[in-house]
Image 1 (cartoon, rainbow, N blue to C red):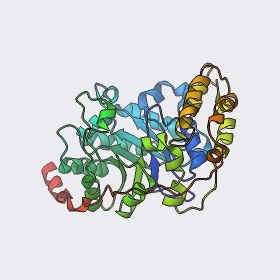
Image 2: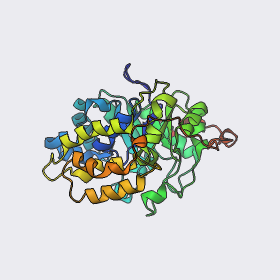
Image 3: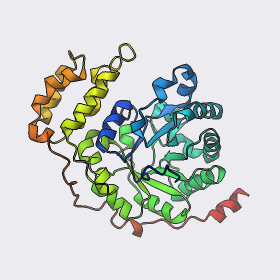
Image 4: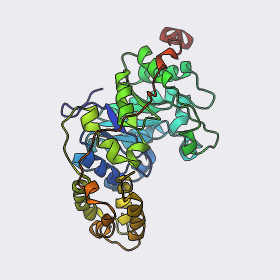
Length: 375
């Protein structure tokens, strides 16, 4: 992966999550971790194209959010090309194409997201178009399969064709298949079993490509276990949102080996208050206090006073008009020793989620056989 000299490589990244990884969350995340790679929410190419006179609302971000990746989705090559070209001046560190979202709104009649895994030729063409319209590296985020198209050979066929038809050299692999039969996105994160053996087989069969593992990894200890097993990078989703202090707070030291910043939650909140009050009501009625404070609701996960803090927050959303007043009404629920404690050592897990995975690897993929079949 080609990354700027002044950024650490994407050993750890926070997954793109609709309605979660917005500008507010990314601001909080960057106050806690300086080196985690952050992703935007998925932006449909059509949204960027049709909002070309209002791009700042969708594409702007503060410089301290680097390294940051823009994820786009779409199934129209012209729209994808135009959207990428419009986004290019914003200087994202990578452009990622969504081939993994199982939401019916995305993968249904609009035919993008996970459904695109059934058409690797189109994805290769789309990635070539994206690469031609941006100065940034490009990547694909996908599942290990879709519905009954879930064999390791079919996954390899997708990777081989996309990487052969385009400059794509980085794939983020969610280690579950997607079920497009109407189950919810939440169930798609639980019902299909994790098959980490597919991910580690890709490392074996495509040594010239880079792969980031995603799915079921919820702690820094599991992140480091994956890296020790040979993963090129690890992407974490909801755990980084629901418990940002415990997870993001250990990324810089435990994953990247950087010295501890010694930052406390009180210091993070003081900086976030300045940011929050500067963006409130920017678009008239939005964002409101609830919008801006939403990413903070997991900051005291499992700490003393957390339940009372959330109840006070819910009440404060009804009447507070500034982040400062929101904090004044709620933070007395949290003891000073919690607010003023720096990040402690990362909690350890008792099990290795990748134990024995190399004993389950599928047979090697033969790209020459694929070339003969395609001839």
